[in-house]
Image 1 (cartoon, one colour):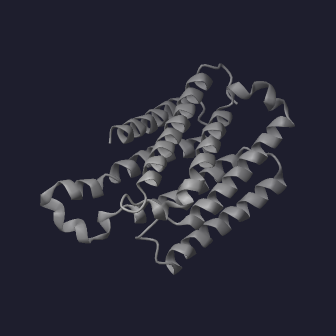
Image 2 (tube, helix red, strand yellow; image 1 turned 90 degrees about the horizontal axis):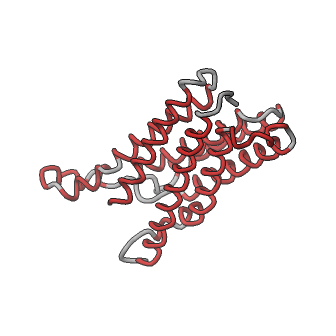
Image 3 (tube, helix red, strand yellow; image 1 turned 60 degrees about the vertical axis):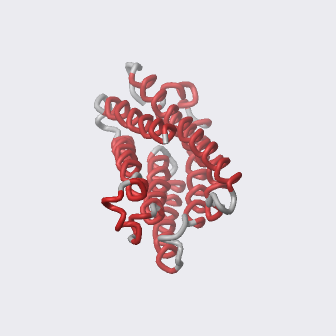
Length: 230
């Protein structure tokens, strides 16, 4: 519980520092959307406490038989939006028209296929969709890889420490790299069935969250101190 509150605090802190940063860089529309998405994430996390409240407070115990008793439906939608946001953001950092066009169609296909997967399967309310994680992570890795490739072939590499996109890419890449394998097997996330997996899942997932949002916070702070914006 305490760790979750720490993560939410870091999410909120990164969103606040991001808001401060974009106030000095009003023309950076993709980053503006990304920062507002961080605030949206905080809202999702807070709403995610509803099932816990249902279990604790007897006055709303009647909700135990409703879809609000579990968070699967909420996060199945959120994860789709999250992956799409990251791919959208890094697509906007690219110069290559061909690469941008590829990611544009990939995003469209991903969104449609993920929604279709949720509608045609019985996992929407019962577990996390492995398809969403696998395809979403794949696209995130590709988009960040394209971003790194262009950065290495341009003068941006000389000032990467002043580029907020670099800090976002590090946090996002590490987070998705270490959590995706666990998320794919999230159907085993049941204390009665596999307590060792539950503990491992929590440790890695929480640590990855702390690392990612710390990267965002550090990036916004460092880049905000630079006179020139990139």
